[in-house]
Length: 129
Image 1 (cartoon, rainbow, N blue to C red):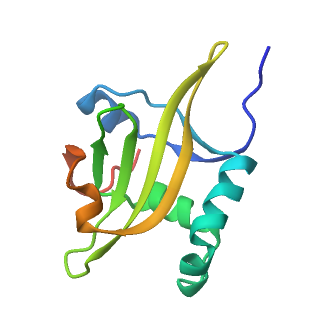
Image 2 (cartoon, helix red, strand yellow; image 1 turned 30 degrees about the horizontal axis):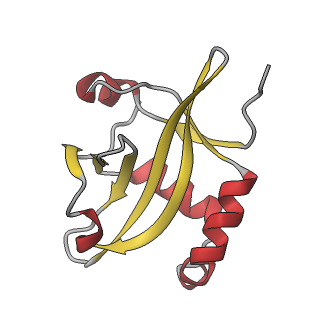
């Protein structure tokens, strides 16, 4: 039996999951994902005064958009009206035995153009459940 490896950084809110027909399950950041994300974005996170885990937790706790791509990976987005950069994490849903999880695949600050081919599923104030 394979066990979920990594840090639970939050849960996808149940009220929102029902609205967009997604699962309300925990969000996990694995050591392998941290290494991958650090290789790509540690300098940017340092400029924000964060590390990878803090950045991911920030997005999980503050996202105000949910998007999906053609491969069904989900994107949680923190968008501020007055800035061209946004904070994004990409999630991949997996089932391991009877446990269902969203794994963080990537995390990064991005510009608006990064999201142009991602379908908007939801926009609004962050759900508090």
